[in-house]
Image (tube, rainbow, N blue to C red):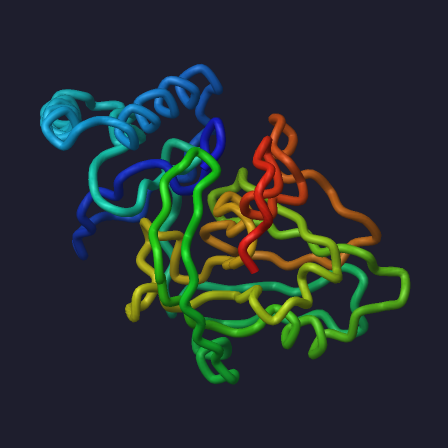
Length: 255
């Protein structure tokens, strides 16, 4: 999704017995760029080459105690990425989403609170800025605009900043963008609860923009005066990430 993006590595299988890892340190940019190169190879390579790469990565993962080989892309539709070496796990017992900043009423939502709100379902293509795409992907959740309306956005506000419980990733949208009907605080993806590796239990979903805008492991929504560049925008990616019309693309965006 960017020289890295939030979605550039294949998720390992999840096991209920996995312990919640400690919050990891941000990964160096040199490692990220290396994984991006392998990701691009996986997109354009023939199936036999891709299978060979997958076999190499699986064997390397068994030998690498650092876990860094888990960042490398694998086969399948989605590619997954984290900008930290590990991410704590959240569930219905300990998850909280805060809404604050330039609002009249700050709020803290549990997972049950979010599930009790009106849900919106949409089916759109997921497009990564590095080139891979997953068509017709269902997402379900609460419209971000509903949470903003409930909080009461002040007249001085012009943007919304998002923070994540990986402790490192951030994103921003203009207030106009955030109020679009196709921007969700998503709880379900592909007709299942969003897994930890997909950025669950709650992630942002910004349908008309490249997937790095759809921040994983969402923990905070802060209404601000102006847009603050997010994790990847600070590293050269466009703040307005319309599909097909940003990051060097000239086509019209998908809306």
